[in-house]
Image 1 (cartoon, each protein chain N blue to C red):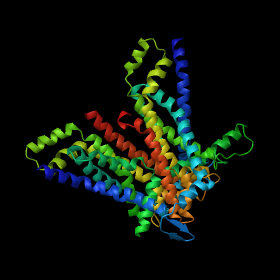
Image 2 (cartoon, each protein chain N blue to C red):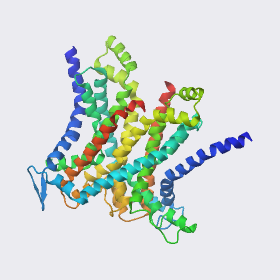
Image 3 (cartoon, rainbow over the protein chains, first blue to last red):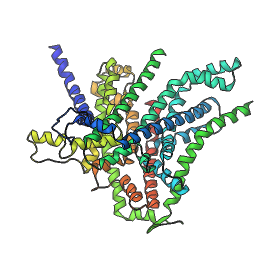
Image 4 (tube, rainbow over the protein chains, first blue to last red):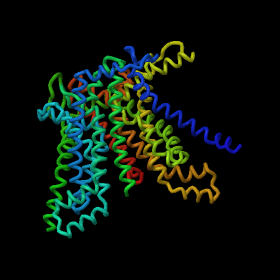
Length: 265
Length: 282
């Protein structure tokens, strides 16, 4: 009797969760399922499974070039964003500087701006200065959007606990450089990793900056965008599933790093 | 010593500051200058004129784009909060704690599909030949295929999907930080569960709602992909109009003026909600 009562009490909540989950997962499941479609349209009925669209994706030279570009732009722009963010966060957390609140605000300001506006600004500026659209231009834009995020993550991790260890090292005669590389960096590397992975994920998925600042060499989301003009196509499902899969793997890596750290502390 | 130290600190901050100045502040300044120039025929005329802004306020085409954007964004924000709150609440209070992390990760998993892929996936689901239309036909509810895309509804469904996940995350993060003792105290003082929710839990979860709502507003009103793929060209939102100005007509001055208006709207919303947006509380 009491278990029936309990069941009835939990029923509405369970139903609600199932319904919302169904809504949330419907498009992703459809995307992945019909990437294994046998025939030429990714619509019901499902007549797979077939791997031929993945074969088509991996033998498509334009897609593979775009994939390559995305990885390079993502890795290099994220490395740069993390490096710039770490240096600035270290200085702002350790040294009292005049107007430090203003500098913090300025560095994090792009966080509350639309990517579209950042992209438009860069497009017009590069255009006015005669700088050609290129993968480098996209990378510059991705550093702009990721630097504030990396800064916020790293800054929040530079607490008093590390500062004490740094002071101890200094008292023992360590140079400023060895303090940074031998004490601070090892202490906060999980934050640096988290910042890097998050940056890479955002760069990997970013569309509007990449779209406006590229001409011949494009990144994966822009190439997928141009595939859309051919309508519904299982090949688009396949490359979309690949992109999704990569993001998920990155996130699992990130989670493992952060969880592992939480367990130790 | 102290002087050397502060010089060194400036050296460390300089790269990040200069990057932000050169590629964020300066571009917006240049865009502002451009917005006072004009595109006449195929030439860009320098100078100072308010014509782009006058055009924005006098032409229904532009004004409507902003109104459409505001309407869609507000609607999306409200629907997403209504969908996300109960989910976040159930995850925070009714799911056993060792399952919570997994359940939350699952609830926001599709968040990580890229914009383009996510909108395309909804196209698969909602187009006339898609799953929803097919299922409704099989069930006998519909006779002919119906397309749910190429309309405002398509845009809204695509947006609500994404922002429900985002809001679930921010509201959940807020809810788990509310001390359980508060609810016990409320119960001891004779409050029913509903009263405790209304007077304790809900007010304390406002910061989580506000942060999520602000992010939703900013990301939604500036998004080009979702309305372009799912909404089509019948009814244009502001980002679509901006993109048309650069694409077809190479009218950078008008596109700049429109972008600045969009920026102004976002800044206004930021100012209004700023006092709720203390991120450390979430």
